[in-house]
Length: 212
Image (cartoon, rainbow, N blue to C red):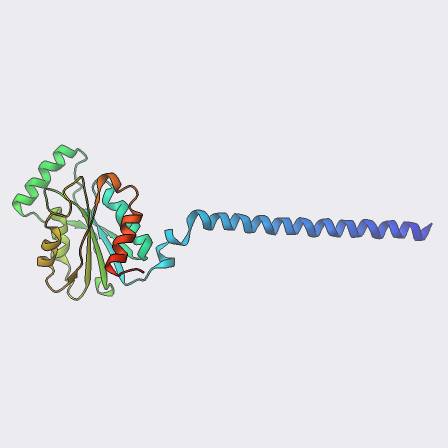
């Protein structure tokens, strides 16, 4: 009788240990699954620090948000740091009024002040510069940027968004403003395509030889 009871107890202990082991394995599997889901959602491509080099910088000004989307795509694909050009005096939200302000700034050769600054632009070899096309030109606050920083010896890659005006003469203007920089051909993305610019950005970067 004692042997029978002992056998039953050993069997129960074995079953209990097996169940515990299975429970821990299931917990580990669940943890790995959650971690994998996080990687799939976030992805290293969305984290510039994971994929890029610290020797490139995306500088952009965006009023409607279109140029910002393109800037973020470039940053994701190259790992570049980002500096947003923010006017010290914000522009108005009304589009028609904005057009009048932009026209007046261009006519007067205005240099709107920029909030903040780039601490050490010397550390960057490649500068991506983005802007909307206003009156077939860069917004005048871009001229403030180029007046403020010497990009001699650096590679400058312009990108622009607009409803259909393209880059106009903005690349030539940048070459004049930064005569000792290597200014690449620019990228133009229409406003209707700015919400999903990754493919266009990727093709441009490969064409320039910046990424493989």
